[in-house]
Image 1 (cartoon, rainbow over the protein chains, first blue to last red):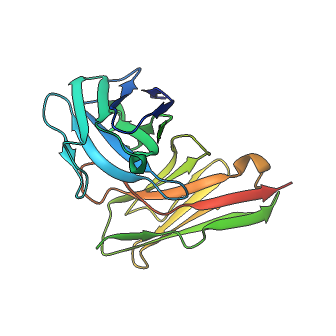
Image 2: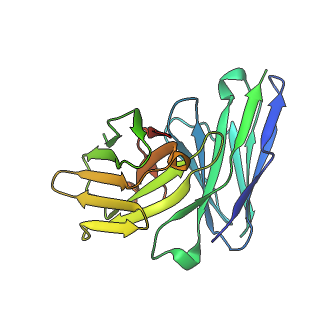
Length: 118
Length: 112
């Protein structure tokens, strides 16, 4: 099946620094990728849609200037948390639909990135 | 507003029994509904998708039903095993952009 990777798997940073998280589709091309955030004991919440070659679409309440998304190629989307603060500590997960499975509509999720801001 | 509820936060069952998880939604008529499994500290893994014109779908020990009148999906794991212990999430594509809106999840614990 299609594989999505994320890097890093875990990051700890100081308040005020920026952190970049990479999401890669390893064996398929993804013109669209999705970024989710999951706080402890809660479900996944969609943050934004990453579109290859165009601007990302952000969900209501998500600050686009704080969560910068770049989708420069068909296999890579990056999420940069700028000037991170402790309240940004969360589990960030990306996903991508495989164009080859578009008729099935299933999503392939990365393993997630645990961000801890001190 | 759209709402997806999984009415059991946690479910404990004995090995060999059938686990039944419920997903209810409001204010929406989805073309399909999906179920995912999530283990602690990991991303969700796709299990099953059921379309609005399908009443039931099976995959090995898994069975999903979809009642669009009741706005409810049931997810069954038969002959449950301790390895089935995980959080199970139902999800809908509410926006039509293939982005998913997830239910709150049910944490299943299968006791040996």
